[in-house]
Image (tube, one colour):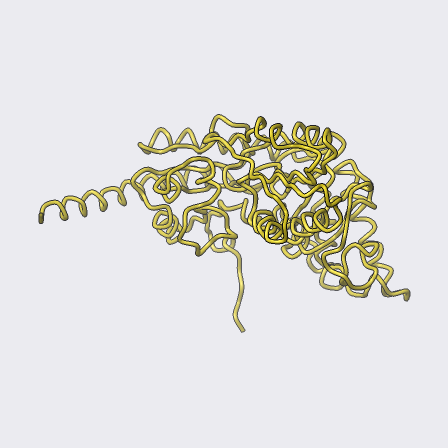
Length: 399
């Protein structure tokens, strides 16, 4: 039987936390408790009581953490399902006179592709542009908002650049014309403080594997007054809002990790310190390198880089062989030879986008790891540039 192990156990340095996070040590220490959990929470016998309790307690913890009611939380498989559910729920329940949607150009594919589907069904989609510095065009939103707008969808923080968007301000604008507001908040928990009373959105979506719990688990916040039609019909689970037996082990794991999310200020400050150290060291040791959206408000853990004269995929694979896990863009687009749509939407050229590298730190990242990575990156970039220069000389020399 194949033996499995994660990268940290093999001495690798994991710097791709925006794609997914390793399991929390607190979760791993209690794993034996999770595998003993079984029983259908919809049943009425004694074996269903623990799953029911887990569902209730976890929703209560989420509500306390985010400032909402437990009844406004729907468990699901993650944010891709939730994003699709929100957009389709609004589309199929909205007044026929409200058929326009404002979607930022840098949303996750689960939002963009759902919007494209709705467009094929007759919806009118306005894609909100962003600047090269990653900032959203508020004037465009003001121009396009009208009594015809059904929904505005703008993520709280971008997964590739770390740019944080003014969701509260956009929510106020949307509500001023009677439109609903959705925000993909996948990149928030564990990196900043979030409160729905201040955020003032109608929908918000989350994936547990982005904050040290298990993949295949997530939840959606749906304000009591917001429209909802289930994407998955079935039994009466989640108050008939999402059919299918709940992922109890995944929700129990989420329950454990939520305890650590109550006070993440120390972790957030340390990630920001390490990110700033990373960027300073890189700028001191590598020429022709840019930090994307450096002047914008960003997540504490994210550095998106353009490394001049270097192919990002080649750089990633070389670093991977040396034991460093990073990304050239969104993990959901891996294997796609095309440049990142997010970076292109920001106005970067194809060449710049193809030279990008994303580094995303986590709770367990150390200063030693950051320094090791910068040293490896510096040496690798210098070697690849020497190879590129040698090849150019060889080509020109034979003309």
